[in-house]
Length: 177
Image (cartoon, rainbow, N blue to C red):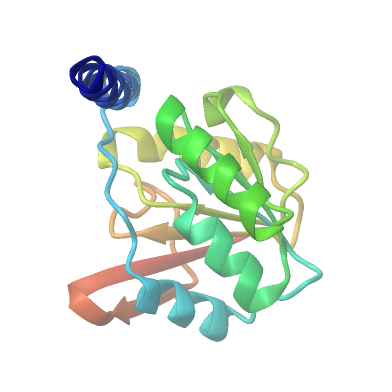
């Protein structure tokens, strides 16, 4: 009996790990962007320097496990939404939001197929091949006064209004409409 229980637990563990691996692989194939977390100190600098507040609506494009979304909500009180294609990271973020009482929302969809006009701030840490499309959508859908916070890989043809150097040799480019 104990042997069967141990085998079932091992099988469940293997199935969960398989789900995580397949989910991350499918998300990577669809986006060509791996899951790379942002450091807590970087988010703290961003919120403080850019004065993100409770009156802001913040979209994280490629929100991963929700770390940026949760910290921005906690530090600023902003309304926060994360868009992510990887099933397991969205599931993790939704569970964490429910457990912690966070009002953050997580949407398991391609952010390019979503309307961004409801936000006044977007944040992204994406690779260069995607940045022209992000720039185009930012310029076409965001309202005057909106801001894009872009980590490490700037928009290809739009001049940034500000640039910050973060700990651990990262850069943040700020674009305003």
